[in-house]
Length: 432
Image (cartoon, rainbow, N blue to C red; front, side, top):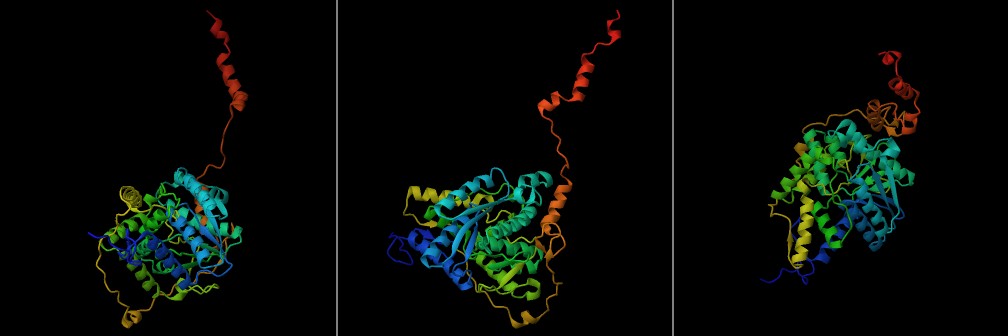
């Protein structure tokens, strides 16, 4: 059987079957097409402006590593004129974040980008290990999501940057749509599907250049480019509600590979039905379209551990895929690599006029921003969500830590009196 030629160049042998559309491509064409699609997403949404300083939310995982690599390549190829740097958050998770930060430090050298690291312990006086030991593994992602969002804002503010890009991919967005759909939270769903989000608590905006990139294609790109990234899952994330939504999305993808983008686009369609006064959407000074405003304490589909987020497919599916890539390449570099099942396509219909006007959306009270009375962070309440969570943690923390050194213990009057009481012989003891 003759080898299948690449669908783009028609000269090289096809080695990769894209999970998104089953297109058979050679390695160079796949890499170029992946980068071109990210470029089209950036330009169509007007994400950047020349001379802008951009902080890349870097966790050391595949998403943020690929994002940094692609942005560096596109910035040089298309002359964006951006000043790129890496911003990492240290949540204080031993055996996970400390190892991934070593990867980020190597990436900073490899991509020649400055690196800034902000820690939970520095900002809040708590690490995530301490939080989990206090509250358990149920609900810990709520704490991490709130703390991480504020930490990113504060880290960017320290650097004088008002634009942070994150590595959220199409799988992440689909999971967020499903989560908010299951919770019945249409306003939050509409904000989460926007490619640009602005925080109601700061002037810093976020954007997601990888919004339409499949997680499997990100792994393929990282593998064929030989990128250095960290692929261990957060030790606390399996307990998160997002894990249930992720499992559902992965099951849908196995039956129908286009399901991921279908869910994302459905979320975008539903977002258009939500009144602007509910979503607080507006226009960007940089020209970006449909900026959604994330209210204080609201997670942005980040999944607790950020983009972070890093080998997060359920059951270690991404790790299995990475191992299969290595095995295929070792055995026979000319084999086609296929990680998708043939799915049946369907036509997506536009909503009818009757559906648009059938019912009026319920008006929600507008939230007014003010400074948090404790930390000064902008909030819709007198006390921000982070301070409220910290108050609950600090109430259960011992007020004073008691510790006695060996030297102090030996010189302790109380201990001396006790020892004297043991060694003193009473007069009655000498009576025979």
